Length: 347
Image (spheres, rainbow, N blue to C red):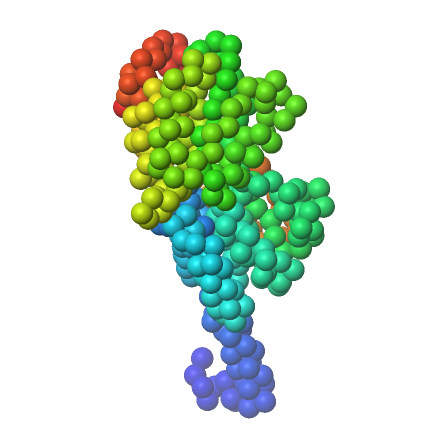
């Protein structure tokens, strides 16, 4: 319909009303502000624990939200001092208290701890993936859940590492388990993983079969590895040396070969990436799927604004994964029947 015909039919006043309504419609729906999600990773972009989660989160967000800006930030906490970590945390806080993203998503404990310290009770919703300290542990300080239901602005996925399943699988290969070592770094993450093993085995007979080997240097790692290898009562070990100091800070990617060279026993890996570093394998949390689930939760919150609908969850997806090359290296014979139990075979 032509402009003059509109004026004749409706009159100038009616035409102006219609114009205002159309203009308002485009402002509200056609030009809505793009949502922004900040993914804060505890580690670096190549980390064997953190990056699969980041990829899972990103894929879930892109699948569920069409017009979304995603920013990824890496703290690299394994390689920096506590003072530098606090500095980076303060910088992150200052920036995003001002910019106010639509949602913050954290992977692993260091990122969670930074954001919980500064954003707990804020209006910005936060979803976490891969915390190893239990939600109940954090709740004693932050009081953000009742049971598992959010009462503040935080929810997410707790990283189970399926220790009991690991023990049951191990018995298939070696029979009754005598002792299992936890070879762990004395940094924050190494200690957290050690405590998580103990937590998941509480009230189980296996808890009394654990032997602890804390290490803080290359020399201590070599010594502990040699002792684990010599002890006939130790049938397997968890390689939780996440970062140690030499001339510089080394991560598990840098030192995995020291453990596999020195210890000719079953290394119980907690994810696929550990197996790709040369460890034996076992029951591994699926880090990608854990991140993907956190991304789905974030998508729901972005769409509805209802964080209280989503209880804190335990990671449910796991893989039975084995490194056959490592099995041959430690002279472990695996029958075809037992091999068929695994979801993925490497080497």
